[in-house]
Structures are given as structure tokens and as C-alpha cells.
Amino acid sequence: AYLESSSARNVPLYERHGFEALGTIQVGSSPPLFPMLRRPRRLAPPPVPANDAPELPASVE
Image (tube, rainbow, N blue to C red; front, side, top):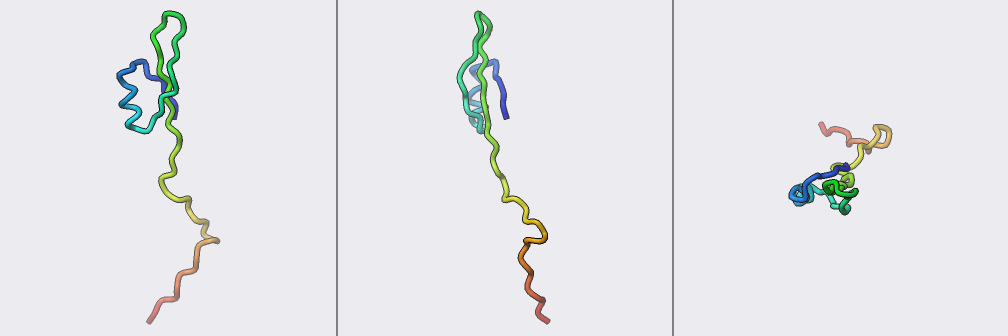
């Protein structure tokens, strides 16, 4: 995810949520912008396709 904060005060807040500060953008006398990036994270292993799933043992009776 990418965002641009218009307030330096918010940068630590976004960093606590996994964003990295990329620097500062300022054109002329405009207010500074603080671009930030959060790289994707894998939260769970990818699903196993049904044809690759291990066989379950036969039930014991």
C-alpha cells in the first residue's frame, strides 16, 4: 500500500502500522508531503490444490 501523509506528526503512526517513510516531497513553497510504503505480507500459506492434497488415512472401525 502507498500513501502520502500531509503531516509529519502522522509519520510515526503509519510506521507503527508497517509503513516505511520514503522521504519528503516538496515543490516550491507548497507544504511537504511524506510518501510511505507498506510492502505486502503473506498472512497464511497458499491453499493446496485438491489434486495435490495428501490422502487421509482410512477410518479405523
